Every structure is written in structure tokens, then in C-alpha cells.
Image: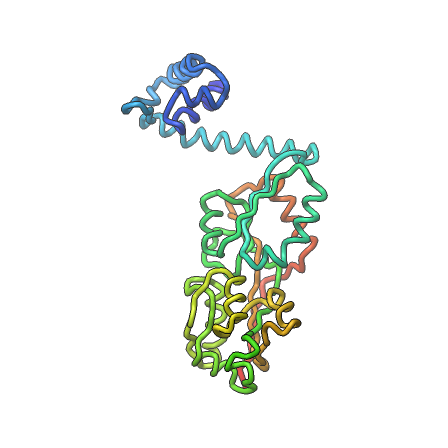
Length: 307
């Protein structure tokens, strides 16, 4: 079996057309047809049939597709290793990150990576943790920075950043002058906060729960930047990462509410699938993260109770 036969077959099945496979590989349609016929002769089975204008794999063809794609992945990994040995002159880094981390956690890591490997294209997806986990599972990205913890054991998880969060309101909001029992007042008023299914929302709710307070969401918003803008507009209180609102607090656009010994803390972590063999760009990026970030071992983050 020749490698080009497998490439042509996978391409033809993917596009549903021998002609499209020929176009993809810059050869003639008869050349592809000849190689597909040789592949069938060598395996002793018909590998595809026609349905209208499309070709579809037979049961034997489905086996070739499944195992053939795995062969191609291994070859891609081999090519990646060679690029690593030659200094990673070409390639792609596919990474996902939550919104906040893209703003104040990763820029210096990206600068170091880009400076050392200018030939590597960086493809960054910014989304909520749940979506990033799904894209990681689907193989759309290799690494992701999400809010920990995650359920299950399918991922390698490396805590990289302790993200301190603070309670803020507009300076003229009714809650701005409260000095005591702040959490109780906020719980009664409601919070502009993350969606109910998000890990960060769960962390915030847990702090209120530890203080015997049910949390009501006045508004649910996916983007922390949008939450900040709505809070600046005086629409309510919110709990947001300190680096994200520090400038607004200094300028007086937002006021930080006192919470005593109560702490809102989330841990951001780099994750990847255990079963995946990371590409050289992904492995190198991971090494830079370890060197640049304050990588911590897993530990319990304690929150106080409101006095």
C-alpha cells in the first residue's frame, strides 16, 4: 500500500468526489481513480460505492477511513517532531482561553513564544470554559486555559494562576455606601453574574452559600467585559477578576465593596487531553507557560465568613 493511495482515498471520501480529491492533490482525476483501484485490489475489498453524485465508503471502506485517519495523524506528529528538531520554523499553535485570561494572563506568554518562534502561527479561540472543553475533546484545539476544577479524569490539569475576584458597583449605586453585611445586601439585590452552568458562577455561589446566603442572578452574561460595562452603567453589583477592574476602580468608575475576610478566588489552569500527543508548538508553549507563570500545585482555596 502506498501512502498516496491512502491520501487519495481519504480525500475522496471526505469530499464525496474523486474529482475533488484530484483537485486537492493537484493531479488528474484518472490518476486518482487508478490509485483507488490499486488500493481496492491490494486489500481485496470494494471500498466505496456511489449514491447519486457522491461516493460513500462501504463497511470495508469505513475501516480504512478510521484507521487511515489515525495513520495520517501519526504521520503529522512525525512531521511535527522533525520541525521541532529543525527549530520549529513552521507550524500552528491551536489554543483556547477564557476571556479574562486572554486579557491579563497570556499576553506575556504569547510575546515570548512569538519572539522565539515567529514562523509558528498562533490560533486563539476565546470562549467560556465549557465550550473550550468541548472543542478540546473534538480536537479543534490542543490546549486550553479554563477555570478549575473540571469533572472527570480525561484531562491533564495544571493550575497556573490564582485569580482574585472582587465585588464592585457603580459609585452612585444604592449598594455603594454599605459597610456591613455587604454579601447579604448583594444577595437580596441580585448580582450581574456569569451564566448558571459556568464554573466561575459556581465558585461565586459557593462563597455566598458558605455564608448562608442564596444568590439571585439579576442578569446572566457570558462575557466578563460585558459584565463590567453593565456594572459601570449602574445596573447592579458584580464579582469580577481584580486585574479586569483595577483601572476602573482607580479612576472611580467602579467602587470595590468591602467583604471582610470573605475571599472570591478562582484558579485558572492549563488543560489538555491525556490521550493526545501534543504537537511541538503546543509542547513548547506549555513549557513557556511553566517558566513564565506562577505554577502552583493543586490546593484548597479557603474563603472566610462575613463578619
